Length: 311
Ligand code: EPU
Image 1 (cartoon, rainbow, N blue to C red):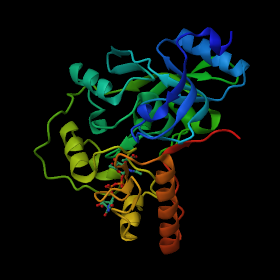
Image 2: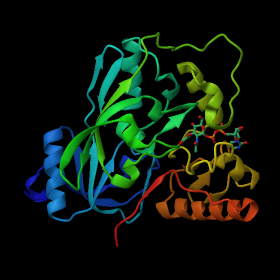
Image 3: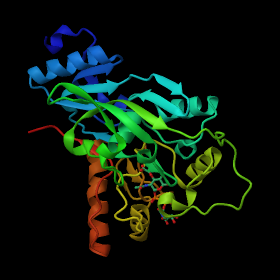
Image 4: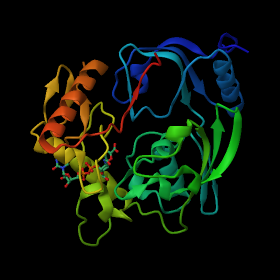
């Protein structure tokens, strides 16, 4: 089969509509994957035709280029979630919002800190997303993966991922998350702000282990900006150094290149004020990297995935 045999694959789809940065030109092919079988058939066809594939979750941690993507973008829209005792079994396209709602309904605890985290479960596993002291790694029990190079699926347990800060081994193997088993606790879902002493909003959120759902929402509103952004642009260089603070100390908050701005609220958030191009955002990135290196001799690394074309 060839990609032409799938009528649901669209051509020249503008990618800015599929990422929270709202930038990016056309993808040659675009496919919304809603069931495993057709998804696997589409991937096999793309492989046979030697077409590059980019797997897209919620689009909250990607930067598409203005020239777009020469290949096939597959948007994971498999979203089923099942509850079994203390376990959630969720497909890769499930959003954190839907996972939280399911946990709250089943009165299971463990996801509260993730309240407000954008994106999908598949993307979160791939990049070990986290906030307020919780990382996806702490929740994953096992997962079903697809390996495009062998065309096979396999079930793996948490250890397989070698999770580290904003990293999983999938970044090297390029295997695709299909389904994830999350282990929660049979304790009450904590939706309300606790009445204990106020929590300090500190580096990497370590103090927030056990933060309640409402706490996460309040802290996010207080410290993080709204607008078209991808969350933190850079990884923190170490557990005791915040990229946002380093950028702030360089006096860069509010700096703007055309429509791309460093948030005046948080130095590690780049904002598309409405008219930014990917080029503007990348120019801002370069300027920030240079300033932080010149001042602190620290090379910041992107957390955001810049979706490049293979030469
Ligand atoms: N700070 C400043 N100025 C700034 C930014 C931060 O002074 O412009 C200070 C803060 O006041 C705080 C410290 O630097 O004392 C650390 O900042 P913050 O608490 O905002 O945490 P962060 O390290 O910048 C990390 C994650 C966020 C996550 C928050 C809360 C990374 C790159 N970022 O931010 O994740 O929401 O902790 O847990 O690890 C993301 O990954 O996209 C993301 C937003």
